[in-house]
Length: 520
Image 1 (cartoon, one colour):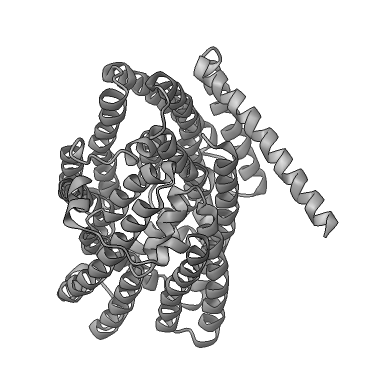
Image 2 (image 1 turned 120 degrees about the vertical axis):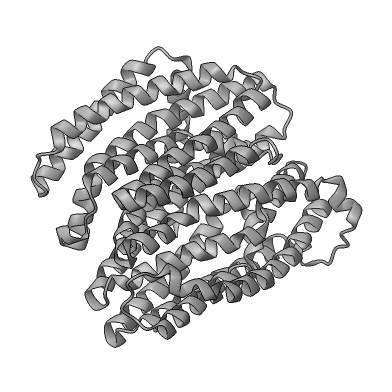
């Protein structure tokens, strides 16, 4: 693993995500000062509708990415150029298809937005503005992929952060002056276009061969098994769109648009924290894994590295799950300024469990995503989609948003199983049963931890002292339990040594930066 590149990507990703998260929290808080929270519900519901339309992408981005990993390793510019040229034209076709599907899907707007206070004409304007933003995202966005697979993702992140700061500042200023949601949406459309144009210019300079025209024959596509990959990924794409995109639509149609907006607050906190503490930290690892998998390292060496990262994943997931359990409700109350914006404690408990399972399997997903071969776990993806819709719809009528979360939690289990079977059993040839039992035991331990931590924190008041007490409990208990579990584990020792190396690299990098700054 290229530690320097991985660290650089991770550090910049985390810093950028922290700043982005602050912007998002400020943005949403100021938004509800000038406009009703219902408008944010529109954005969430229509966003889920367009996630269904993303099925038209057919997984081309993922398929091109794992083919690019092979060519990046050998620096085969001709093949890289061909793949990126193919990517560009396919995405242009996809943009047209998504636009057409979006126009057709607009007939469902009156049925998926329940109890809206605005007129149907206004809802259609919001819908089409968000559709325009989605379609615009397909133009030029393919150039981001070359930075990701070449372990230079930090450049894309810097550009996105720069444009986001400018646009969101302008959004909030105009929102305060005009109190007009449509102006807000139009500016949001500009963010994607500006960022993609800047990325295009930078990649043209750094990868000049991408500006050339290439001839891509049917044999090129056929030899890489892209047609079969697209067919298999289509099941993944449809299933993922249903699993990830159905919750807000179900909540809106059964529980009402305001509940969607409240649910959105929890989603933003969840995604922001995970992006800062986990996903942004690990996203650069995916490119490193891709480079390693297609190198000449032995399976035993790769397995040892996987187990080290899996220990980190489990260790950190316990903090993620317990953190959401004890901080979500206070965070929403302090952020939005009232208990009127809170959902039930039962929902938060289920949401925290789902977060733990998701985070504990993130390393497996990073490995799974660099292999392609989507035939292997397509049935698991399909099962998860069906389970999520059926369970969520049935339980939403009885338990509201808590019922929807039960569906989301249970439906994630087939996804996890499919990924684990693919990576552990099919690629590494290791016993699946042993791996599953190990993680079930860890999950049981986390459940006991959760009950104990919840009992300790449930009565703590929501003020500065109370938050500090929660932080101390959250920091101490998982650390004590995890160290007790992993103290003699050789992979935990490998992880500690790896972090020592990373720490030294970070210190040297910071020192060099300070020296350069002082010289200037």
